[in-house]
Each structure stands twice: as structure tokens, then as C-alpha cells.
Image (cartoon, rainbow, N blue to C red):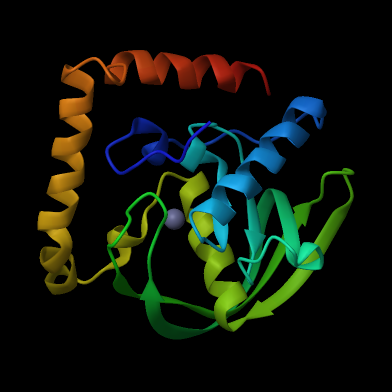
Length: 193
Ligand code: ZN
């Protein structure tokens, strides 16, 4: 498992709900926490490791010692939103790229944990932003999609670099082509449906 970068079709995939909580899913979750900590991130969505499932992991402290701050959101739904606030975002699938993104200031999110128990959280500030960013990933949406035209054009050269890198990895055979990657996503998807 690895964090895939901009250009990978998984990042534009609309993921399917989790229907089975099994050991495989628990293994995915612990691997994702590890990758997230290595990359010094605070959230990581399944799409970012080429898994087409609706879940993400969060630890707002980015500190692996802070186990109490680890949260897994299975099948998350943002059910309430209030206010709008702009703030800077980055993404582990777009290293070194940042932009100002408008998000709801406060949200209520419903999800399930790894024991299959439903929970609800009222969030604001950074946790609210992270949950909105990660929920977007599950719908194939990336933070640059939210930028104004001007802000977007500033980062377009960086995005183009990612695409070129991705394509050259495909043409050198280091990565499968898009058809094969999509085929893999379809196969993984059928394991949860
Ligand atoms: Zn992201």
C-alpha cells in the first residue's frame, strides 16, 4: 500500500460504502495510519491508497503516540453545516501544493467505527475542515476543485507536473496504465458490495 499522487484514477473515483467490517478492513486502517504518520499528515482517505471504499482515518495531532486522537470514519455523512470559513489546505496526494479553500465552519458528521457502532460528531475549526476534505476524497473531489479560477491557475503548473510524472511512470512500466488501474479498483469494489 502507498499513497497515490495526483493523476491516479483512484483520486477521481466515487467510492462504495463499506458493507463488511472484517480483518482485511482493520489491516487497511492500521496501514493507512502508518502511512499517514510517515507523511506527517492529519487525515488520509481510502481513495488515496487506491481503495475504492468510503472511509478515512484522522489524527489531528499527527502524533502516533496520541492514540486517543485516532478516529476511523466508515461511511461518513455530513448531515449539518453552518457558516463558511476560508483556510489553507494541502493534501498528501498533492505534496507541496497549497490553496485557500472555503469550507463550512461547523459541521455535524455521522459515521460508523470499526466495531460497527454509529457515532455523531459536532466539529468546527481544523477537525471540521479535515472531515470535509476527506469526505470529498470519497467522492473523487480534490481541494483544487474548490479554488477560485485565479488561485487554481497559480497551482496549475504544479498539477501539470504531477500528471507528467504520473504518465511517465506509466509509460516506463513502473505503474499500470489507467485501464488496468480502473480494473483493479472495480475488482476491489466488488469485494465490498
Ligand atoms: Zn487530501
